Length: 168
Image: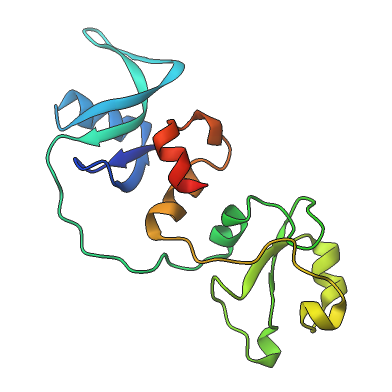
């Protein structure tokens, strides 16, 4: 499970890593802990440190520019916080706003999270044809926002305020 956010030296999100990998980076002095889990600690024979939730690398890592976050079904569900775009209940499927049979593709702007009932009821129609207006419009998250949303899907309030604002 990847549950530790890695920030570049410039505080931009880079990736998520396992808790064990984060501890190794901190112990090797390659990263510092920016935020720790409140009640978890990592203990060893000569080590007792708080379990890191967010770490920052000590040296800047140059990353190639990524313009778009890769689309995925899980990404759409996380982006919409597992809430149906039609009724607001818990979403379990992904619905195409413009159905694939009518030329709609697997893109961030054409897919929304949906409950199975609404997905079945809308069927092979647009929301206007089905009389099912969207509660919120789909959007394309930046790569950094997609990572923060995925990391914070269960524990959004636990992120530092300065990180949570960019993922909202």
